Length: 90
Image 1 (cartoon, rainbow, N blue to C red):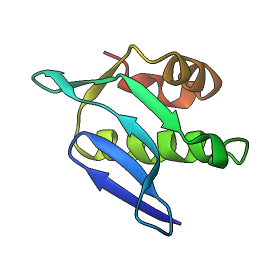
Image 2 (cartoon, rainbow, N blue to C red; image 1 turned 90 degrees about the horizontal axis):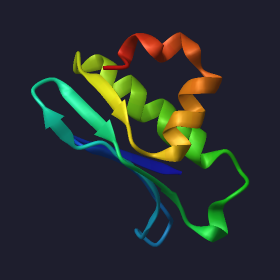
Image 3 (cartoon, rainbow, N blue to C red; image 1 turned 180 degrees about the vertical axis):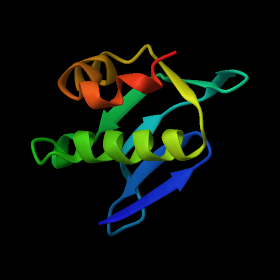
Image 4 (tube, rainbow, N blue to C red; image 1 turned 120 degrees about the horizontal axis):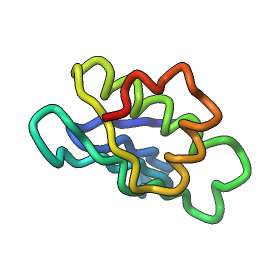
């Protein structure tokens, strides 16, 4: 498994280099990002990949000292299940 973290996204790359999953979090104002999209390819679903992507995204956002907004439904559900990260909510 290859995860790649960029300024505004975390992606999971398959063996062929194709993006098999991602969490996008563009900056919407100074110091605030919006987790706007979580995607996992149908062939990769059911293996916990979305949760691992979200965990990596949250760790990156925290390391950058930023806050989050949650327009993605999956992100809203993930934060509800992981209240220990609610300090990041804008």
